[in-house]
Image (tube, rainbow, N blue to C red; front, side, top):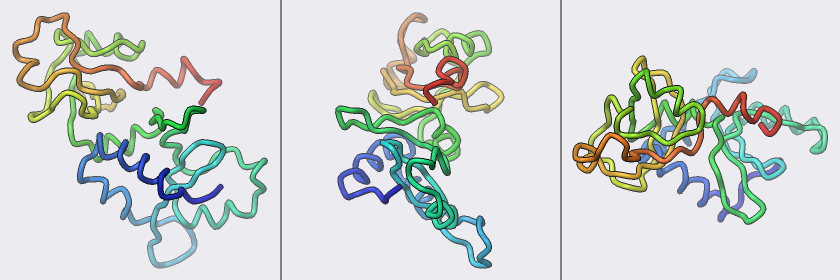
Length: 187
């Protein structure tokens, strides 16, 4: 367990910025009420076995008593580095992304299962979409009852979605809550 270095921090923040925009400041400066201290602490990012964790500083102090090889996980795993060195957000970061999302998409109840099985979001399954989305933006996918289902990358802008045929892809799938079942060995 160690703090992220300069390049790792830049890569993680760029990926998070794609989804939350200027709300990244809220994530970084979020006060933490964990621990015995009466004053609120803060959250930080730590790297453990190529995974990046969002964890309170009070928990980091406690985790230093555990050896690195015995420490399995702590805090919220927001992503991991691949062998090639690129950073991928994991589904465990969904709660953080959903609370601070800049761009959102809501699905019709009939297309929720399709998305949860790992398919892209089609125009026919789209119920609502926030304005000013451009292709390549990070998008958090919600059900009509505002339950976060996953996240992906916008394939079309908001304006293009209005003219798109019902089978056109609107959001490219990256992660969904169905991964908890499909990939429980890897998480």
